Amino acid sequence: MKRETPQESVPLPLARVLLPVGYGAPLHRTCIDQALVCLPRALLVEVRWSSRSRLPGWGGAALRRRYGARYLDVGPLLGNSAYREPGQIRIAALPQGVEVLLQLMEQGHTPLLLLCGCAEYLRCHRRQICEAVQAADPSVTIWQPEQVLLWLASLPRQEGPHTCSV
Image (spheres, rainbow, N blue to C red):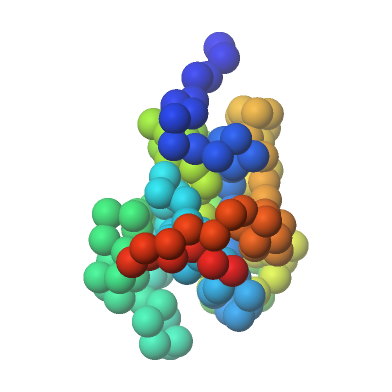
């Protein structure tokens, strides 16, 4: 079944995109802020098993205050329940979580910024989540934060209270 995506407010290159971000990497923190300012359909999707953080401002409650309805916690579905065991990944309810992400994109939310604390994508459970979503829907694209920041920098500058500048 072909999925239709509302295109009126979604920049074409970012239609049906997952953007895995780890706030443990400073560049990713910049990408989170810029994407949420510049891309009105973007959502910050919490995929940590526990949304607590030792880094000020990165706990679930602080993110909810900062981003409001643009922050969604799906950690109970997509969190790594083995996060305390180095090298181990056990995603709580991967099939159900993948369906939630696909439904969000179906509603026009894109990119979905998949948030974890890990700085390294290749060692993080975000990679397995992205691969599972792509397996379920090959039209989904995975962009890394560096790609998004370069793309945003190429856009014409916008003026106003929420200036989009990279």
